[in-house]
Image 1 (cartoon, rainbow, N blue to C red):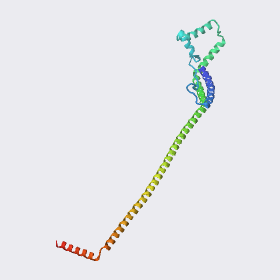
Image 2: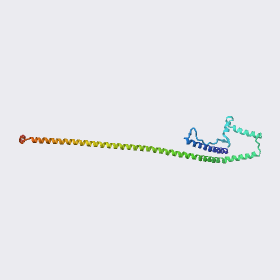
Image 3: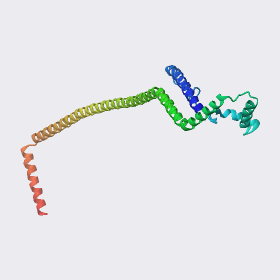
Image 4: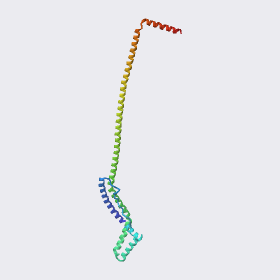
Length: 246
């Protein structure tokens, strides 16, 4: 467990430096253009690998599996320890028992307090990572709000274009209405003048007819003598008397 804590601490420090470098490169890249997330993904904080017996990496056991099977790593460890002790390469002096007692205490402390310490260190690493990414998150949020504002401004600009187009159409309608009004005024004026000429012609014709009738009546009256008038009157009376008898 302590080895895992140490590995996580080292990984946290490496992730901090990597994040700073990535942020610097990202800042310089974003100044030029948009970051290529596909070809150049952002670095992710690495997690330490699995361990056995609290400190032995899993890769060491996987190395023996293809050659000795599952029990090979344990057999190798026990055999190596037996060989070192039997050949007195590793002498069991009084420091050995001190080390053995220390190992037992470390194992107890690891099993008892290791998970809590690991959890606390993980929370600290997450806190550091969150603090480092907070600026980036705020910048992304600000840029997203800016993009939204720009899209809203573009939408409003499109609305202004529609409004200007509507105003142009309104002006064209007003011009068309003025043209039609002037056209109607011209028509009415021409019709009034034509009606005046028609009435004038009809009046002149009536005056000519009346004058002609009066002239004919006057001349006819002048041509009739008193004797002809008397004869005509007598003839009319005779005709009326004849009609009365019938």
